[in-house]
Length: 109
Length: 109
DNA sequence: TTATCATATCGCAATATTACGATATATATT
DNA sequence: AATATATATCGTAATATTGCGATATGATAA
Image 1 (cartoon, each protein chain N blue to C red):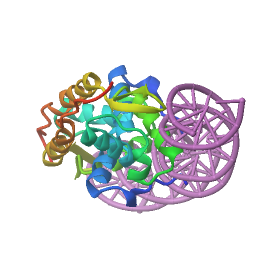
Image 2: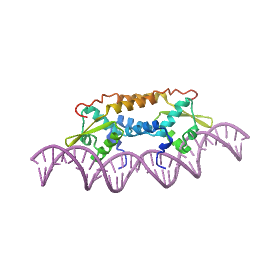
Image 3: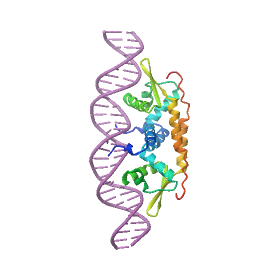
Image 4: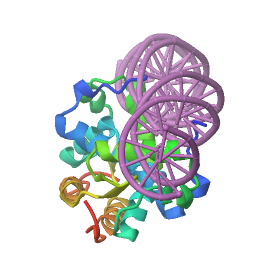
């Protein structure tokens, strides 16, 4: 136990689930918001901005990179992060495909 | 460590984060999809449908209830679950408010 | 009342996540 | 070359999550 039984779910549900899971942390939402606000890439302003340790920020950035919503390019001695617009919009689309379904109950509730 | 430092984030980010976190599990997505498909309420068809133990399904249902996306009403000896349309749409709206932001990078990437 | 369903809760083991200090790596500056 | 700066990775402690068997609860049926 303790391990999610991904083998019993559809690929779509696993994919959507893992994307939502990664977004489901306030630090990662705050990081995304900061990147969006600054428009341009940022580096370790995040450490000061959020008040988390540098190692922790780096770890969150890695997870966001893993699902593809951000990308980082090396800029001199720092790294420039920005939103990957394509993945961002694709994810939003998938989310809305799920949420646009008719959720009206028939019998009870 | 090990505990998410919610005190350093805005209420909005914490709220959005916890909603996304709960949705970020394939079992809970599969449960929601099943409720949507059946339109009417269901009970422990989910145990057969998903192949998870009854205790596990019950726990996932509880978490979905906690964030308000589903509600359960007692129907004789079983419980009728359905989507709470109001919360559902409200959450979709909050999600899209976040994702509709202009994510275009200025300088690099 | 007793038996039988349906669901919830408890307790626990396995595993995952979060956070951080320490250290590694890689580039820029002196 | 030596130093400084920015970021990544490692190792680890604290905590959270997942899943399940066992048991409790609560309603219906016999």
